[in-house]
Each structure stands twice: as C-alpha cells, then as structure tokens.
Image (cartoon, rainbow, N blue to C red; front, side, top):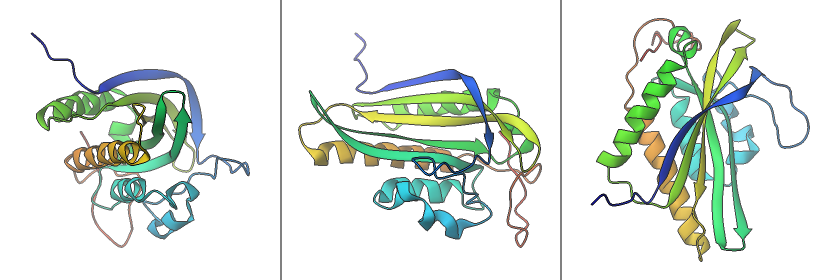
Length: 201
C-alpha cells in the first residue's frame, strides 16, 4: 500500500510573460535587483528584512558559485479560518545563456528536486508549486524563461509551526539548488573581477 506524501510538489507553465528589469511601482513591486552583480543590494529588499531564511536562500542563489540568480521573492504570514499559514515564493533563473533559453532545463530541475524530496524524506505539510514563465532579460537582450517556486504551508494552530515548515522548505530548496554544478561557459552575469565562468545543466 502506498503511503500518501505529506507535501504536494507540482509544476506548471504560466500563460503570461514579462520583462526584466521591471520598473518600480511604489507598491509591493520594488523592482528587480541584480544581486549577482551587486550583492550589497540585498539589504535594500523589503521582503527580506524580517525573513532570515528567505534572505539566506536569496543570498545563496546569487553567490558567484551559484548556477542561478534571483528574480523576485515574497514572504507573508496569514490567518485563515483553519489556522495560520506562511506563504510566499522565490523566483530565479539560470545564469547561463543556453539553459535560460530552453524551459526543459527547469523541467529537469523539478524532476530532480522531486526525487530529492523523497530521498531526503521531506515530511512537512507544504505545497510547492513550480511555475515556469517566459521572460525577456532586457539588459542583456535574451529571451528565455524564469521559474517561481510558490510555497504555502498547511494551516497550523501555532505560528511557530507555520514558521518552521516555511523555514525548512526554504532550506531544502537552498540545499538542492546548491548541488547543481556550474560549467565554465555562457555566463549571463558575473563579477568581472572573478573568472568563474557560466553554468549549464
């Protein structure tokens, strides 16, 4: 008999598209910050001011040795009729001109992440929804794709329970993405003071 998993991990293609960098609008959208080239800007992102776990994930995504760069993020606690939930997302893209232009590389990431959850015996009641979206990176003239992972915890009676599920989910994503190797070609963004090369699947 198959034991049902406590989490849900899904993948979708968005029917929409967007351009990056996108302008600030004075509301919840604070504009794209290129943390790959300017890591010091991480402290200017309001969404990270009170969420150390999300900040750690964003910092890891934009490290020079990472295969990715962040596109956006969000974090919020909310009260529902059934309990407290923590929800939000992290959005990222391949830092490789080859990988970023073919959505199949995100499909591959999702497949291996699903296996990773099983191998690590991830046992938290969380919904992880991967959404791949077309995007134009205007500053480098590349059309390709980015991916957002929406995380939504199950209703919890205690705030601490929702926070724990959220934090462990983010840490799991961070550890998985850190395992993705990089290769020395086709980099999109890199510190010109470092000869780190680019990344591929």
